[in-house]
Image (tube, rainbow, N blue to C red):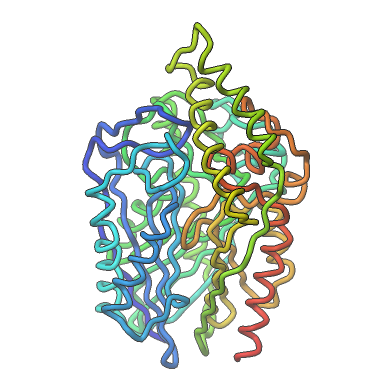
Length: 460
């Protein structure tokens, strides 16, 4: 097997708005805490080549960006198909916005967006240029002090508690407690690249933060790359849909302090994995992707949308309405979402058609979908998988909202637009983005991943 790694700086200029934490926050960046990068791996075995790309970005809601990245890569490397190119984002909330949905969550900077696909493709070019024979090793190592389940556990504990070395959430079994680490070494013993698959929101830094950085995954990867010169470290975001970092929604100075602590914790876990990794044989590489239909829940009727519209207009048209108030800003977002969903209903759409992708390297399997996947879904996908080392990856080849587990998905159809009542991921976020809520995405994702895996088995 041969492999090569490349990286390219994709940091926008200071002044662009940052993505995440709420609508119309005017989070204009004031400086760069840590650069953002595109990091790419090209891997080839027995004539089949695949590319995996890791981006220090929140999410790519824009189908055209994914399409353009793949087009540029395939123009330069025509042996590749789209199913051979996997693009994953880390989900940092301290990077720029790339979206056509979620109005208000930062303004996308058009010049930066225009050059982004070219920069990402350049990281892949570098990886191709550096390809050489490699030995692949892997390990699964403990990583218990990073996140908590924000849906089924108490979110945002006191900072003094989470900064303790032995802190862990009340319900660690509802989070990722282990990290899959893969390392690539040359025949003369040089480590040229490594990957870490783990699921947790990179939200240590807060809404008050105005510095550009990749949050704890980005800082951890940069620290490790400095520790291992000549290597490229790739963070592959796992099932983070319902997992927050232990520090979230704190003040700016508290957040910046905690950022280095959480980055160090994750780097320690990855370092342990690099030290413990055992060789795995890679007899072949295969890839597959398909577009599947994810059915929509028919709760947004015209009558219900009209009811929500009146509720939100009452907030906006109140005599004391104030645009500095979060409730008012959210009401403006919901009104725009309502208009988009009306168009969805008029066109008779019944859900979303989105790509699910698998790349298999021997016993290692990367399994990606363009959603923020919840832990219970990942656990079921992993339990059903017939490969030895399955890795589930959120936010792969796009981002189309949360993939809620069955408990969250069917916990009720309340569409109250204010506060967090357990339906944020399953009802409110679709309303924000102007799309139908998912009706059965837990079971559909499990089934589609199994179908793709079976097809790969049949082709082997």
